[in-house]
Length: 147
Image (cartoon, rainbow, N blue to C red; front, side):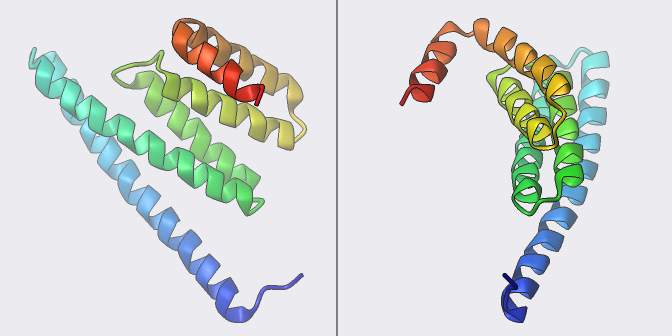
């Protein structure tokens, strides 16, 4: 099936806009991480935490970008966005967060789509270990999977 030219241009334009936005946010993320590091080294902990929370928000954007790329069949681009998101969350204020577990699960699903099942298993195990530290969330996840 071919898309009408106007729809194709709209989808292409949206992809470009999202990619440019992600690039700008990556720069802002790097700036936030540098500022957090400076604040931490100077024992300005509340300020460091604010910068780290800002940096972690960018990971959510990357996760969404990865979903877009995956939907478009751009698996290599989706993988790059998820790798970056996981790295941000691992270095963020809460490296054992449920958000990280969600990104690891998304990455594992993507790897399965790419027929890289053995790599996916390791990520699923990491995600499960994180969720095990959050018993209420694990129960909620199992309940939603059975529906």
